[in-house]
Image (cartoon, rainbow, N blue to C red; front, top):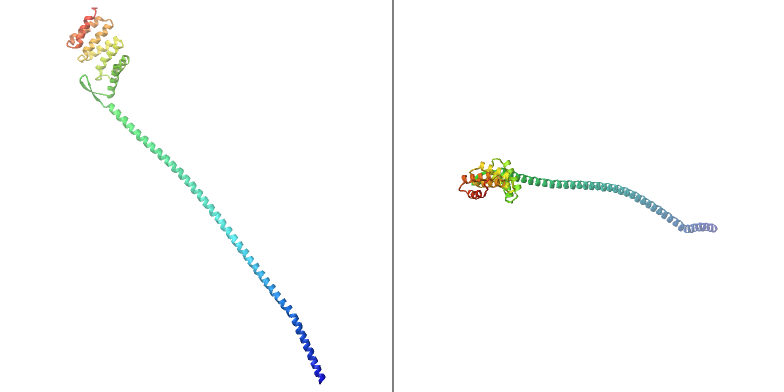
Length: 279
């Protein structure tokens, strides 16, 4: 019994020893297994982290690509809008330049129109003034000739007065021509008698005695009652004497004394008659 018990105890001891060894072995192996377990979890965590990082990177790349695409599209749209705005500004600038040119043209046309209007107004005034002057020249004017009042053409009066101005200036050559032209131009003029009388004096002054004789004779024949008729007869006699026609001069002086005895010319004619040769 004792040996059985001993054997049993020995068996128990072996079992206990084996168990102790197993426990010891387990105790020795546990840290390694625990470490191995920890490494797997860490590796798994690292792998998981890498996967998430990779996923994040891919998502970031995708987002970056998306943003890049969006920015590219926005940039293209912006470039297109800027181009459209530039074209619009260029077109507006061209239109503005065109409008400026048209405005300048309009201003130029307006200035030209204003000048044309001013020129037309000036011409109208000039034409009106010229017409008034012509009408005034055509309208008869009243003049007093040899104590009588006449209505004559203004140009007629001016022509006669110009001829007389030349006569008073002593240019008998021009005066004779002007007075002769006046008689041809204004036949029947109220100035005719005066023109004849002074034409005779102008011809006498330039020593055209034959012409003077004709002029004085025409004057006396046309206006025997004229206040200057006695003077004309005296001048006629002097002209005849200059041509050595003493007989004719004596006859004219005798006519003067007989026809106009109370005139001053008749008194001068008597003296002149006395000084003339008999022949």
